[in-house]
Length: 125
Image 1 (cartoon, one colour):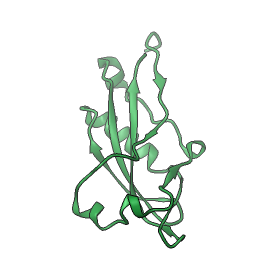
Image 2 (cartoon, rainbow, N blue to C red):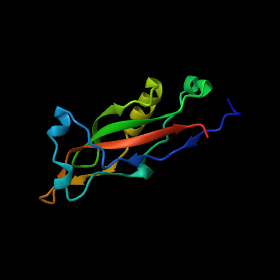
Image 3 (cartoon, helix red, strand yellow):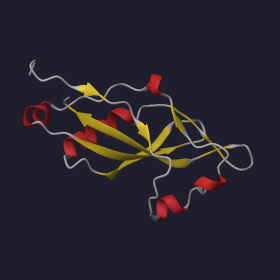
């Protein structure tokens, strides 16, 4: 619909987010990292706003979890907290899973694999 304008909000890293779970418990503790994984915004394609969601006026914020390996590549991804609309969540997850990150650096100065939370805001403003 051409009369609806959308605005793409860049990703907001949620470095202070506390998320439980056995997969996350196996990662180096955030406080032990010399540097957290950082998203390279230039490597990301804008997620596609699904037409059905756009027509329905769906908006929301999804928290995604990306397992970033020692080379900065996304090795796995999942939805941490839904926007309330599964198609919005999946569109953001699939598009951003191809992004590149600056890898996290462990206490020994070497790159490490970590789960990194990222928030994506769907807005039609």
